[in-house]
Image 1 (spheres, rainbow, N blue to C red):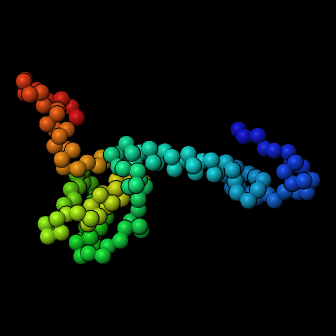
Image 2 (image 1 turned 180 degrees about the horizontal axis):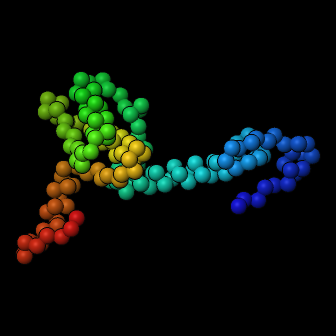
Length: 152
Protein backbone atom coordinates (compact mmCIF):
# COMPACT_ATOMS: atom_id res chain seq x y z
CA UNK A 1 0.00 0.00 0.00
CA UNK A 2 1.25 3.49 -0.81
CA UNK A 3 1.45 6.08 1.98
CA UNK A 4 -1.00 8.96 1.69
CA UNK A 5 0.70 12.29 2.37
CA UNK A 6 -0.51 14.35 5.29
CA UNK A 7 -3.63 16.26 4.18
CA UNK A 8 -2.54 19.50 5.78
CA UNK A 9 0.84 19.27 4.02
CA UNK A 10 -0.75 18.64 0.64
CA UNK A 11 -3.23 21.47 0.78
CA UNK A 12 -1.40 24.07 2.82
CA UNK A 13 -3.94 23.64 5.61
CA UNK A 14 -7.08 23.74 3.40
CA UNK A 15 -9.25 20.72 2.57
CA UNK A 16 -7.84 19.05 -0.56
CA UNK A 17 -10.02 18.07 -3.50
CA UNK A 18 -11.32 14.53 -3.02
CA UNK A 19 -12.99 12.02 -5.28
CA UNK A 20 -14.86 8.83 -4.58
CA UNK A 21 -13.54 5.82 -6.45
CA UNK A 22 -16.10 3.03 -6.80
CA UNK A 23 -13.33 0.45 -6.46
CA UNK A 24 -10.96 1.95 -3.89
CA UNK A 25 -13.01 4.39 -1.82
CA UNK A 26 -12.16 7.98 -1.01
CA UNK A 27 -9.06 9.30 -2.76
CA UNK A 28 -7.24 12.62 -2.60
CA UNK A 29 -6.72 14.54 -5.84
CA UNK A 30 -8.53 14.50 -9.16
CA UNK A 31 -7.90 10.81 -10.03
CA UNK A 32 -7.67 7.56 -8.10
CA UNK A 33 -3.96 6.81 -7.85
CA UNK A 34 -4.65 3.09 -7.28
CA UNK A 35 -6.69 2.90 -10.49
CA UNK A 36 -3.86 4.69 -12.34
CA UNK A 37 -1.32 2.17 -11.03
CA UNK A 38 -3.58 -0.75 -11.99
CA UNK A 39 -4.17 0.68 -15.50
CA UNK A 40 -0.43 1.09 -16.00
CA UNK A 41 0.25 -2.46 -14.76
CA UNK A 42 -2.45 -3.88 -17.06
CA UNK A 43 -1.12 -1.90 -20.05
CA UNK A 44 2.40 -3.24 -19.45
CA UNK A 45 1.07 -6.80 -19.13
CA UNK A 46 -0.83 -6.49 -22.42
CA UNK A 47 2.25 -5.11 -24.19
CA UNK A 48 4.26 -8.06 -22.85
CA UNK A 49 1.64 -10.50 -24.19
CA UNK A 50 1.72 -8.77 -27.59
CA UNK A 51 5.51 -9.10 -27.63
CA UNK A 52 5.27 -12.79 -26.74
CA UNK A 53 3.01 -13.27 -29.79
CA UNK A 54 5.87 -12.15 -32.06
CA UNK A 55 4.67 -8.60 -32.73
CA UNK A 56 7.04 -5.66 -33.07
CA UNK A 57 6.35 -2.89 -30.51
CA UNK A 58 4.72 -0.58 -33.07
CA UNK A 59 2.02 -3.24 -33.60
CA UNK A 60 1.20 -3.85 -29.92
CA UNK A 61 -2.42 -3.51 -28.76
CA UNK A 62 -3.88 -2.38 -32.10
CA UNK A 63 -7.66 -2.27 -32.66
CA UNK A 64 -9.95 -2.17 -35.70
CA UNK A 65 -10.91 1.46 -35.09
CA UNK A 66 -7.35 2.52 -35.98
CA UNK A 67 -7.19 0.56 -39.26
CA UNK A 68 -7.79 2.52 -42.47
CA UNK A 69 -9.38 0.72 -45.41
CA UNK A 70 -8.76 2.72 -48.57
CA UNK A 71 -8.35 -0.21 -50.97
CA UNK A 72 -11.12 -2.67 -51.91
CA UNK A 73 -9.01 -5.67 -50.85
CA UNK A 74 -8.57 -4.19 -47.37
CA UNK A 75 -12.33 -4.01 -46.84
CA UNK A 76 -12.60 -7.70 -47.74
CA UNK A 77 -9.64 -8.51 -45.48
CA UNK A 78 -11.23 -6.72 -42.49
CA UNK A 79 -14.46 -8.64 -43.05
CA UNK A 80 -12.51 -11.94 -43.18
CA UNK A 81 -10.56 -10.96 -40.05
CA UNK A 82 -13.76 -10.23 -38.11
CA UNK A 83 -15.23 -13.58 -39.25
CA UNK A 84 -12.01 -15.32 -38.17
CA UNK A 85 -12.25 -13.80 -34.69
CA UNK A 86 -15.91 -14.76 -34.37
CA UNK A 87 -15.32 -18.32 -35.62
CA UNK A 88 -13.38 -21.35 -34.47
CA UNK A 89 -10.47 -21.12 -36.91
CA UNK A 90 -6.86 -21.87 -36.00
CA UNK A 91 -4.78 -20.31 -38.79
CA UNK A 92 -5.12 -17.13 -40.82
CA UNK A 93 -2.76 -16.25 -43.66
CA UNK A 94 -2.48 -12.78 -45.21
CA UNK A 95 -1.15 -12.37 -48.74
CA UNK A 96 -0.57 -9.14 -50.67
CA UNK A 97 -1.78 -8.49 -54.18
CA UNK A 98 0.70 -9.41 -56.92
CA UNK A 99 0.01 -6.16 -58.78
CA UNK A 100 0.93 -4.15 -55.71
CA UNK A 101 3.83 -6.51 -54.91
CA UNK A 102 2.26 -7.10 -51.51
CA UNK A 103 4.04 -4.21 -49.78
CA UNK A 104 2.22 -1.64 -47.64
CA UNK A 105 -1.23 -3.17 -47.88
CA UNK A 106 -1.72 -3.50 -44.12
CA UNK A 107 -1.24 -7.25 -43.67
CA UNK A 108 0.94 -7.00 -40.57
CA UNK A 109 -1.30 -4.36 -39.00
CA UNK A 110 -4.40 -6.47 -39.62
CA UNK A 111 -2.67 -9.59 -38.27
CA UNK A 112 -1.73 -7.64 -35.14
CA UNK A 113 -5.35 -6.50 -34.74
CA UNK A 114 -6.60 -10.08 -35.10
CA UNK A 115 -4.13 -11.35 -32.50
CA UNK A 116 -5.00 -8.61 -30.02
CA UNK A 117 -8.77 -9.02 -30.51
CA UNK A 118 -8.44 -12.78 -30.01
CA UNK A 119 -6.59 -12.10 -26.78
CA UNK A 120 -9.23 -9.62 -25.57
CA UNK A 121 -12.34 -11.46 -26.70
CA UNK A 122 -11.38 -15.11 -26.29
CA UNK A 123 -8.31 -15.00 -24.03
CA UNK A 124 -6.37 -16.85 -26.74
CA UNK A 125 -2.68 -16.16 -27.36
CA UNK A 126 -1.69 -16.51 -30.99
CA UNK A 127 1.59 -16.18 -32.86
CA UNK A 128 2.60 -13.81 -35.63
CA UNK A 129 5.20 -14.95 -38.13
CA UNK A 130 6.27 -14.21 -41.66
CA UNK A 131 6.35 -17.09 -44.13
CA UNK A 132 10.14 -16.95 -44.37
CA UNK A 133 10.55 -17.04 -40.58
CA UNK A 134 8.12 -19.94 -40.28
CA UNK A 135 9.91 -21.92 -43.00
CA UNK A 136 13.28 -21.25 -41.34
CA UNK A 137 11.94 -22.58 -38.03
CA UNK A 138 10.58 -25.67 -39.76
CA UNK A 139 13.91 -26.24 -41.52
CA UNK A 140 15.85 -25.76 -38.28
CA UNK A 141 13.60 -28.26 -36.51
CA UNK A 142 14.71 -31.12 -38.74
CA UNK A 143 17.92 -32.87 -37.82
CA UNK A 144 19.71 -33.09 -41.18
CA UNK A 145 21.59 -36.31 -40.39
CA UNK A 146 18.88 -38.45 -38.83
CA UNK A 147 15.72 -36.93 -40.26
CA UNK A 148 14.37 -36.63 -36.71
CA UNK A 149 12.25 -33.61 -35.97
CA UNK A 150 12.13 -31.40 -32.92
CA UNK A 151 9.11 -29.63 -31.50
CA UNK A 152 8.96 -25.97 -32.55
